Image (cartoon, rainbow, N blue to C red; front, side):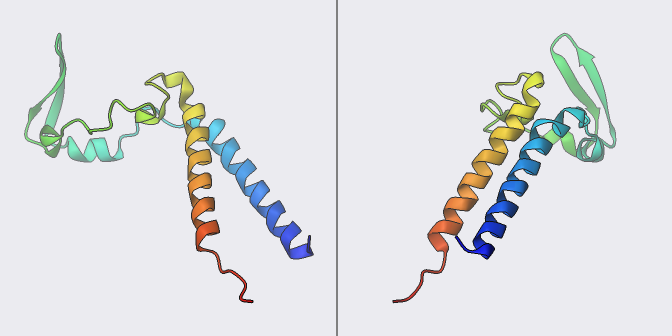
Length: 115
């Protein structure tokens, strides 16, 4: 193994470790109710809670929103099966899947030595 290969491997392992720590630990400190996009789309409406759940009254963009087709998927809402205490696990799964897919694509598309 050459020095460059060892250095690249060390960098990639450190990158993976930092990404896993950020996804698995720091994600628990994220705000559970981020308000940027929600606030912008709900401008002009009021959220009213009733027996049927929350509804919007007024005129705003959010009234036209529909449920995403993947809203019931296992990792929807940054949690595993909707359990809010699994945010870190969902982040770790996301990192592993992303690194695996990206690594596979880089490996498939790499330059091969000409003989």
